[in-house]
Image (cartoon, rainbow, N blue to C red; front, side):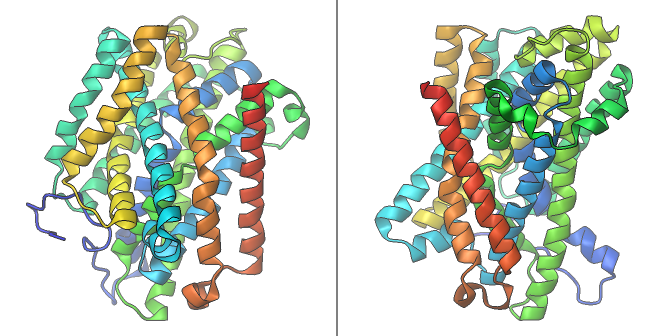
Length: 435
């Protein structure tokens, strides 16, 4: 695959590596390893997360904050499995699935992975369209159409190396974080109540409505395409085939993952805290749409700053997810089918397919369909997740494949426990939908 600045494909996680000098200081090595976790963390703060967190905070205050915490901790466990797999084997989850399963099963996995990428892009389209609607005053339909032009952004990054892309993503995450920091300062939540919300309370989940939202938060947090993506991205930081080099890479990848997903946790928690402090506390317990949250911030906070910052953060969340979704699509396509297409074509196909249901939903059902479609996109992601988790846990528990980096008994128990919990959550969610 070409790797020069004029390469017609997206940056390759295998060939576009970052050199780690052997004599570099610990701090220098950490700085060089930081990056893959940042790209993955974007999936943990996309517009789908916003929809579930805003409704949870509005309806139940801080009561479901512990669900955000536990979902993020679960994500850290699973993403660390991905980085371990990619570093130990030198192959990503898609490549291994294609080589170790029958062609029919592998193609089925590929289709499910593509469906999850499409569902993610649908959430990005709706989130960016809402941001354009809120900030520019255009209709949501016009906002949906405007999102088609982000293909131009991806085309401009064609051939860019991962360090440049990682820097862009870091800037967008910093933008989102700064916006919510200012908003929380303006809203002044009661922090003892926030701390109380971090304490798990299973009584809160005894009723159908909060349990449904908790499942939505779980589905919005860990995304199937992120598992494929992360197992590929970490290979940009491996500088040796010996066990010592791999062990060092795994250690730094773990730190990168935990630090990056901790940022995502803080942002998701901030969204729920914002909704709880601004809406639930003032009696606005029916705020379930992102656009409702935007318009209500002005009179509640006493100025236009909070709502504008909210819109800017939403736009940044949608656009940053665009980059990682495109790269994930390339990883899945190349891994399962050994097929390569130009980066901009991949982006154009995915965005084109996402625009169709977005436009149909908004035109047919009106602006109120946005929230429903966002939640639906997270349902689709949640339903796809076990199909990516099964091979991930199986592969990382295979001593012949992983060698000394095979999962310990504790990790196996935790991973299969999460698999069972997510599968049970999906079954519960499906029961809610059909009942």
